[in-house]
Length: 272
Image 1: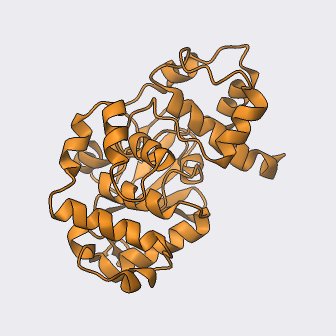
Image 2: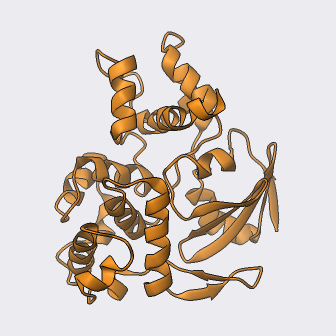
């Protein structure tokens, strides 16, 4: 176990912020995550965070994954007092951080997310992992499954993948896996590209449009200026920023603020 004190971090809010589909609440204050082929449990009480890993594993995997390299005091300090909506959204979502997820998994996850809802996305991803990922045991001796690599999927038929409740999205995943395996799409080159370059390159993949490419840029490549616009954010923009979102003011961090807005729009009514 590794324990540390973290400011501006709330694992519960991160879990329910819609950016990750393999994180879930096990019991009160304890959450499990499967990422990069590893399993971890995180327990938080106020600012004290206990993780079921060694200090070495925390620094090699989880510190970056959890967005702990980013200075959120600087990010939140950018918000103008006159931007009342963002001040409310930021206060409501205080503690959310943008995760840095595994690139291939994020591509597949957001291909699945199209015209879909979070419970169904999670179910499809779980089925995909159980059927085509590697079987492992966690610290409790329970079975968990890693996310399947492109090599495990590219040879499958569309009908086999559809059994994972993917519908028309199965062909997107198959074509993408094949492109990576045959080398026609260079996955390893993406982290070296700028945000604009990476966004354009991602849209060469079958089934990846502007919104999905923005999600991948934000949640995997960690371009914090990426700004995915879904139905929630579109509503926020129309109601609160009719003259346009102040990207110049929030240059470099607009994606992090977008996450506060998304979480606020998704959850505020539940707590009002």
